Image 1 (cartoon, helix red, strand yellow):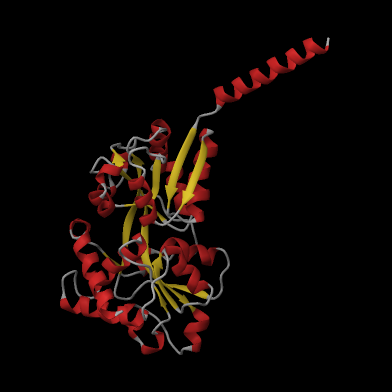
Image 2 (cartoon, one colour):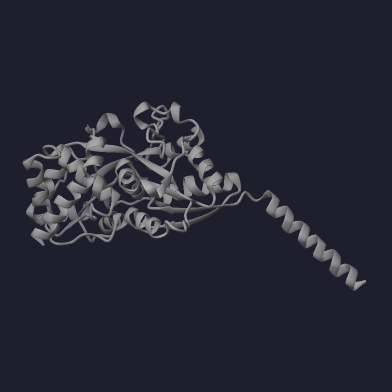
Length: 337
């Protein structure tokens, strides 16, 4: 009798295991520089919706790309979620495989996938994050980039390295654009002065910028909208978001499928999901802005575009000249430090 019972239990266990395998939708391995809000609101929501097991490794954009490069012969990731843009694509084409998501043609023309490789899914803006306690103690009122050259802020400004951080790269391009132009001596003179203000310090990555401002290590940070607004939404009272009076740029943030990935069907499904109305409405309630501009933001902490001076980046120029601009920055940094 015991033998029959054991056999019955074993059969039942096998049936349950088989049933679970039949209903499971597989895996998706993701490398991402994105904030917790995007990861929880978009990535894990997607996993729950389609019963897909998400394996996430969070790291900076530069680290994501380095890891993908190191693993090219045997790719471990399926998707790079965020951190992809025209500049990243043009310098790392071999890391990604082509796919145009369903619904791409319904997006505004400027945000559609025209390369065939990466899917724009939200708009990410550059801004300053100010620690109001330190700002008050220093007797300052930060309104834009020009204010960062105040001697009182020397050594109190947080910035990541534009060579390895996508948000710092976006800030450098924003600064050059609004302070005179990408090749203008005036703009590069400002950059040189700003480097001196950094006093030889760069943060380890994008997240260290806004965290450092919030924690009082720095008075001002050169950062981006998503984590800045997330701090406000989480109840932070000691920081404020400043959109530079000289102009702030919003760029489409994108995701892409890793070349030779193991879970390609799930990767394609994720790309489709990112630009679906369902996901775009999720984005509208988070701390970013939907790439489908027909869908309005619902987060009360996001200042309407109508109240911000918007600057428009020449994406084709900055992408084509990324290495040259980064080298010029690096040469200046080495010269001054």
